[in-house]
Length: 104
Image (cartoon, rainbow, N blue to C red; front, side):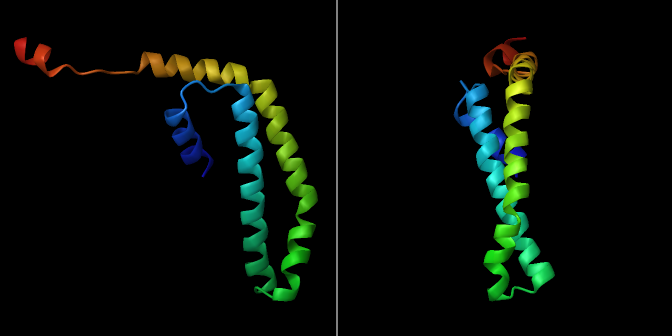
């Protein structure tokens, strides 16, 4: 999920920065935690309607720590990783010109 969303955002908005990575980490961290809480509710509590809210409330501390971790890692590693990705993007960008290929 994170890879797909990040790839889409990178293609759609090529001038992204560390601030954007932090925001994406917050949003995707919340989405991941909600998905995990929902699946726990289904698997462990057999989708009992009375246990839906307690399951999500019980997951809040972990979710908060997960999001804080995402923000810290994005702030610490964001700039070097962006530099690395942009370098790879430049090195592996291939263009094909059919006219030049036919002339050769």
